[in-house]
Picture (cartoon, rainbow, N blue to C red):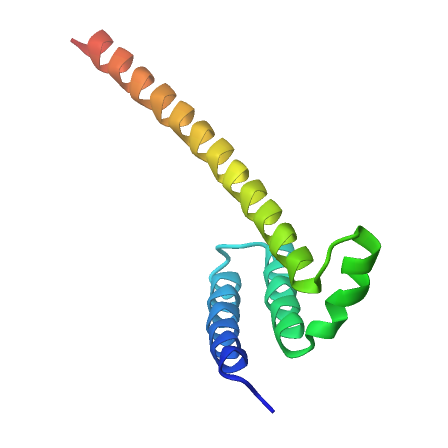
Length: 111
């Protein structure tokens, strides 16, 4: 029997996967990123529809419930992705600063 949470997750996963596929078609993300995100969404679907699949991982890691493993891994993944975004933003800020500085020097030389 399908539960309400399974329906909600399925609708969300279909929406998220469609966004990923559209970004890949527009060449906004690489093929590697496409497969990574599709694997994430497929994994989420698998865990929601077959929660017993997480029990062996929980037992191996010494965690009480399988869903706890998923939550811990999700939090770790989120922190990693936030770190990557932070590094990328810092790089962009440095690039913008360099361009603005160069433009200011070039304008000053012209005067």
